[in-house]
Image 1 (cartoon, rainbow, N blue to C red):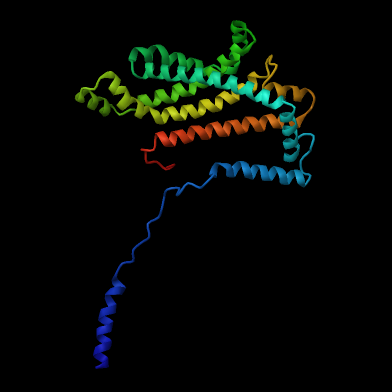
Image 2 (image 1 turned 60 degrees about the horizontal axis):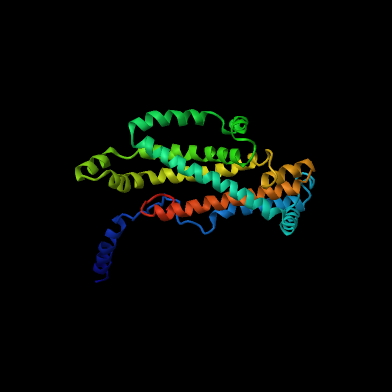
Length: 282
């Protein structure tokens, strides 16, 4: 009886050995988005800066400690210098960015939706792109004077180029089958633009928008050192004349914060508007 029982048990167990093991599927995607992940890099950089300053590895005259920069920034804010310069810089950057945004989108639509527009616009923009924008400053000073107008114009040029290039590339990359489908469905020109062109161009537009936002701050820091009487760039230029490295770092930190916040805002809007896409970032 025991031998029969043992044999039956062996028969029952044997198939289990031949059963293939289920392999665990590897996840190739980056995984869940970490909370406040974009702040990890800046926080680590700040920690290394503070540690090097506390250890005496940095020359205080060249690179002041973070707490010194904070004290200087608080003093500049208290006496009213920093708020005035920030508002002036924001006004210049916002005005130039708005003009560049509108120009870039309109030129991209005219060039991407019309062969005539492409012939007239695309080559001109490519030529403008090949010319260093900051190299146009002397010419724009002769044309527009040395006041606020030329500063806004240069910022607008810095902004419109990446917006145009990325939006135009996105328009050119729309699958022609969608165009044929729209023609079969009898869509009007307005409906075609609203239902096919705009959704297809939005990913490229947001890439150009992020580059344009960054470009507006990069152009501003240079332009505000040319015959300016206020602004963050002017504050940093004056600090350079007096060897005030802490004031220069205050300006750089403010520029960095503005750049990070504006880029994060664009990314947030992009995720909301393009929530229908399934990508690695989502």
